[in-house]
Length: 325
Image 1: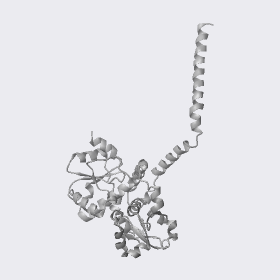
Image 2 (image 1 turned 45 degrees about the vertical axis):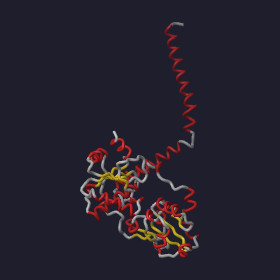
Image 3 (image 1 turned 120 degrees about the vertical axis):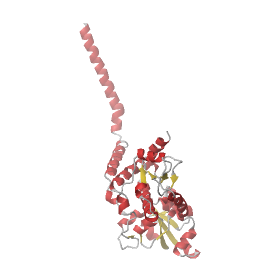
Image 4 (image 1 turned 180 degrees about the vertical axis):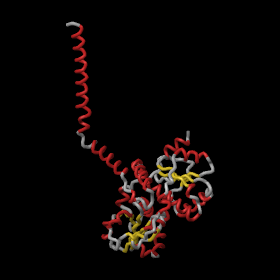
């Protein structure tokens, strides 16, 4: 065999080996994954959900956020889904109630709206009374709300509701009474009920957030936020319901978790910064809603300039790293 033929045979043999190894790897690793119905549908579902979030319907949230912010908040919420607080199944079973189970209650039912006054004013359940969830730390407050004595309280049934069941579940668990339940699904379940039904939601036509504030974009980029941070005269508020990073220099002001007494106490501190810049840290849609609610209150009740209010959205980790170099 001459050298030329030997070289050709060597090259062809090498190509054949590469081909066989490639086919082996394909059948051993790739093909089982391709046919694995438990894996690829999950990826497809994730991609589908991302696409849905990108196409989020702005009309559904325009009562509280601008269209662009609604899209951002939806994507931000997707990023935080693993950190979202879930209502423990045992708490649901013991203290939760579904709207479909209301007809099985054979006691006089009282509804408590545990949301903020602006939310209650916008729309609330027929016959419900407003008492913020963080303020319900004693069953006597419920008695006073409905003017009931002990006997009447024991013979009645109370249902606390909020937006999604998070705040109201905390109340039901904290009080621990068998006749005090939280509405598992939150207020959204009432949207499908007839307007004149016993459990219908009554709209007032008054938005929780004014159109002016709703339509304004208060978001600030991280570099501008850092500039404001370097000026120690400004204040940074922590409005993140679910905190990924504990940032010591943020002033905790999560409205939906503060009792009215604690809210007033902390608000007095914020009022000292009326002529300064305020940066509100928010990570999810709920945080954005309370940011705009705070802006509305500060402008309306205390004469703050909304142009000095900024929201750093879904960048808390990056901001923490930037400011701790």
